[in-house]
Image 1 (cartoon, rainbow, N blue to C red):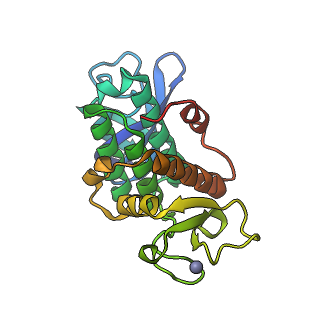
Image 2: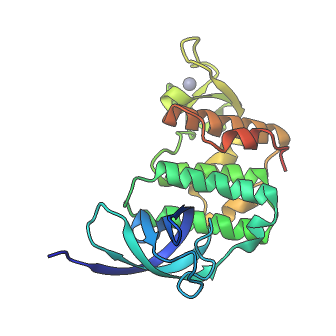
Length: 256
Ligand SMILES: [Zn+2]
């Protein structure tokens, strides 16, 4: 006999696909179950069970039934907590939400609970919804997402001689080693090093360790914005062996 388990948790919609004439398949990032995929039967007609809550980045309280662990769950209802509607009215905000959403989707294994990542994602959406879209905070949240999934780059000291960030002026980020080297330790054998100044490194380190709601307050100089963006993009490309889908669109945008 099949065992049905009933669950309730908070969830953020990552993506939605129409399925047949009436149904939708939804990818969700949930607080207690990590990333799951669910079938929302009759979702395209039922405003009562799914009152606009299946759009990307909606935060809701979902109830679902699970039969077999590795299969789709059946979504019973999604009650809205926050629609984050401002995100969809501004193309830059939409893009920023898509970027962090893609990172959460890409770096989370299926069904692995990660509450810190859930809090980071919902904090980012809420901040983006209420305030302006600033590239400094986008970079900060990208760093924090990497840290939440265990890929924080080592930025506090030179990976070769252990010289601390305070002791040097400029460092080089080397994606292959996942961290920085000082100007004395960098060698021609290190592929594609990225020069980063101490200010950039300190700001990026702050985003990994500070309380989540402080990430949005980070300010970066124009130079640090460029260095930070290049560092994060290069590291992600190294980790995945490819660019994120959102990388190209982001590249075409002027920093804010
Ligand atoms: Zn060194």
